[in-house]
Amino acid sequence: MRLSRYFLPILKEDPKEAEIVSHRLMLRAGMIRQEASGIYAWLPLGLRVLGKVERIVREEQDRTGAMELLMPTIQPADLWIESGRYNDYGQEMLRIRDRHDRAMLYGPTNEEMVTEMFRASVRSYRDLPLNLYHIQWKFRDEVRPRFGVMRSREFLMKDAYSFDVDKEGARRSYNKMFVAYLRTFARMGLTAIPMQADSGPIGGDMSHEFIILATTGESEVFCDRAVLDMPVPGEDVDYEGDLQPLVDKFTSRYASTDEKHDPEEFAREVSEDRRVSARGIEVGHIFYFGTKYSEPMKAVVAGPDGMEKPVHMGSYGIGPTRLVAAIIEASHDDAGIVWPGSVTPFDVGLINLKAGDETTDEACDDIYGKLGNAGVDTLYDDTGDRAGAKFATMDLIGLPFQIVVGPRGLAGGTAEIKVRATGERETVSLESALARAIEVAKGATF
RNA sequence: CGGGGCAUGGCGCAGUCUGGUAGCGCACCUGGUUUGGGACCAGGGGGUCGCAGGUUCAAAUCCUGCUGCCCCGACCA
Image 1 (cartoon, rainbow, N blue to C red):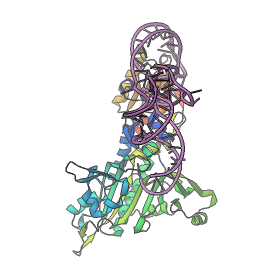
Image 2 (image 1 turned 120 degrees about the vertical axis):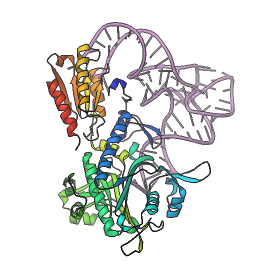
Image 3 (image 1 turned 90 degrees about the vertical axis):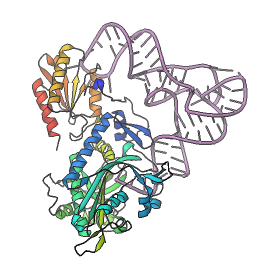
Image 4 (image 1 turned 120 degrees about the horizontal axis):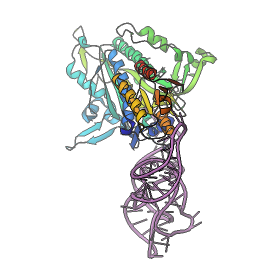
């Protein structure tokens, strides 16, 4: 993409409404634009990142055997009346009426709808286990939206729903999601800590929030330093095998949000040098809720004995829009965003230091073309801006690898390459600049 | 929903106390000089001052009502 043709409304100054760093940087880098309180438009640069986050989430869900579908944003109220949540959900649910005065709502979540779909088609335990998910926009009319897309009213959510014949089956489904979540966040360069969360009326140990540590986090969290260093399973993980030991390993160490925090247990179980108390951002939440919906909504399957029983369900959420902000919170510096390779909007930034100069243009166009042929997503700064502005822009939008081409280097057949994360710069031949860029771009896919 | 604050061109702000017909920086357009870390000169375009009433010869400025947005709290992917 040529920067001269790209829609990239960069802001030089900090917008006054943005308090936290991710919100500030997303606005400044031209990723999002606020349209109303808690409602954002995703601009081309932001959408690229969101798309990559979504792709990683999707790949890791698919790996577990979960199946993607797409449910609508607008739902009939009937389903919610049936489950009993139409009244319970309160002001957070955006209620609307269609032209026939039928009660509808903009979905804040999809338990009811997916349960309805399930009961309409599944009759036998033989069809289980089943896990259906979608990645869809949700609307929750938050009391106080804040922090940009971190706590917005309209947000993208991956929500998966598992159906099993009994609690043991549900645990296996739960464990799959647990492991998939570890991998999903790790691929985005995040260290997410599964923390025991409030599991509501069902009780038990099957509810975890996945938290990443950040000073701007909304909740206070406590954990054993050891969980931060636990290796995340590789892509060879066997989802059909027994995942319990792996899950146990992660959950054996103390890790809790402030709601469930027990200071005495924390002090007893974790030696002082390993105690971490920090702030965290919730990027995912998984839980088992048994027959809470299947019972009132009569989602039942026949068991081997021919008797019908309500299915055991779980639901598993990840907020891709929030994740984009969380990644920035975890990875930025004074100059701007530092994208992990796996979610960067462009793999490579190519800077033409003297756009309009025949020789320089020719050399840059050549590199740009070759990068394109190699499948490397490149943002080519072919504008007439001054060098300082170009560098500032490239650093702000955080592209991991940059190639800087100017007449001075070209005279000796060289260009400068820069690694955004470390700030390392090196003067190399044009050929090796190209080779390095391709290498870096290929390596980005975990 | 309680408490605090803001609303003036795309962005950041001054002007409001003390009414006199709107200004600065950045951005944008034209021409020129520049070009290796956010250039300079000259010229130019763009704002019914959030909305609605009121006071006044005259309102961005004073009065009343409303709306939007931000921050702090209780709730949440």
